[in-house]
Image 1 (cartoon, rainbow, N blue to C red):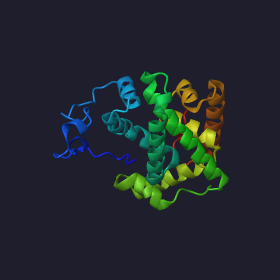
Image 2 (cartoon, helix red, strand yellow):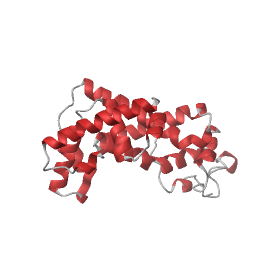
Image 3 (cartoon, helix red, strand yellow):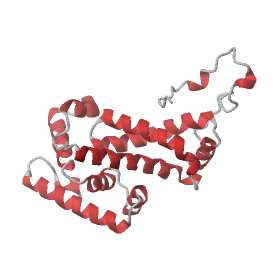
Image 4 (cartoon, rainbow, N blue to C red):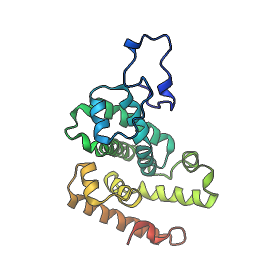
Length: 221
């Protein structure tokens, strides 16, 4: 399944295709962007083609941002996003509350990120992020000094356990509450609080060891 749907996908139906063979939801170029998340989920469950396209276009930026901030690599974030949406399309029929579609997608991405971080730990990928990966993620908007700080940041994040790292990123970078993280990661709120406290203390200590390169506000108060 190709997930990167073109923006002009509504115009791809061949003129020679008999009207009875064309998906009715695509004919006429309806604008489905105003559909609620719940209606979008219900349409996806019903197998409507437009819902597949709209799901990717609506939620892919969210998943790519989350994965990029967690992994520090744009290319790895794109791989996670592709896999996450494959899972969403396969498992959406199990969604009991269509109105929680956004949380469902977030949870799929978080589970994949947990698995990826554990895999990296097992393979002992504890060095700084590769410069080429960070350069692709940062692009031309960051100067040399900023890219160096970013490398150092991800070098520290990789010293955390996978769970602590993900909790830290979700809270400090994604601004998710303890309750939201607990739901997304399927763990208790008390576990989230302990992981966040532990991660914040570890990061604060490591930053304190190099006080010149990072402001303490990055790690919270």
